Image (cartoon, rainbow, N blue to C red; front, side):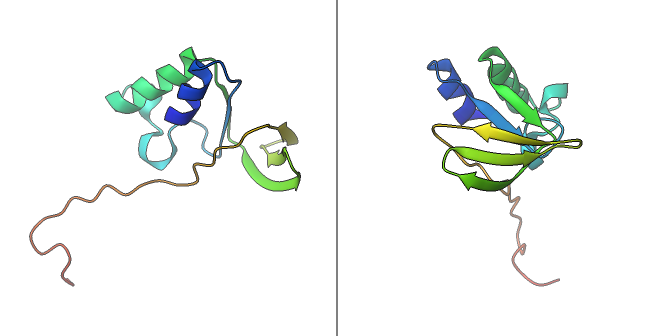
Amino acid sequence: MSAAASAAECGVRVGIVDDNFNLGGQIWRGGSAGKNPEATHWAERVRAANVTSLCGMRVFDQPEAGVLLAEGMDDVHDLHYDKLVLATGARERFLPFPGWTLPT
């Protein structure tokens, strides 16, 4: 979300494809509902920057350079791009405590 907002704020036309129905991935997907202030900040910044959000879609193929195929619930879409940034997964937030690396 930060890469998309930052690029769009610099005048680049930007789109996000997310297989979840809300932005934010595994960590922040509830952010637009106000549950996480940092996630809410980024969701609002993405919206304010006019980033196109394609939620509920998955990219499954790149038939040629500059084109991705994405499937939604009802259709397949051709997505054309000049530059591509991939953010493919969540990060873990470990909460260490004494003995947390020992077997149980």
